[in-house]
Length: 122
Image (tube, rainbow, N blue to C red; front, side, top):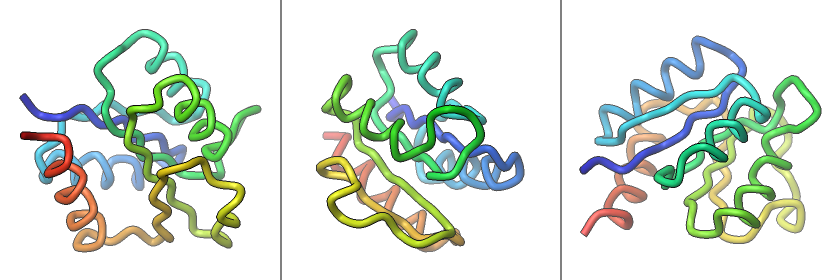
């Protein structure tokens, strides 16, 4: 069975590209356009293994707050945070999170997702 990855990105075209890359890397994907939408999905599913989120998104919760919430409530979830802006300071990130600067190109994401998938599948 393929691992399940949730892509959280408010820019539709970027989100579509990330979903395509994740599926090509062997993941099943879900997608959300905001942290609030992602939380709704997370609260109704218990099989999401990877969260891939942008930091800046509309709404009350940004991707960094989402990542902290996921780390607290679902500590086994692998988290990747990306941003086209200044990277957050190390003490702003939850524990065991990978930060990826934007633009996230195919080879860079493919390598990361391949490594994550290898860790998740026996």
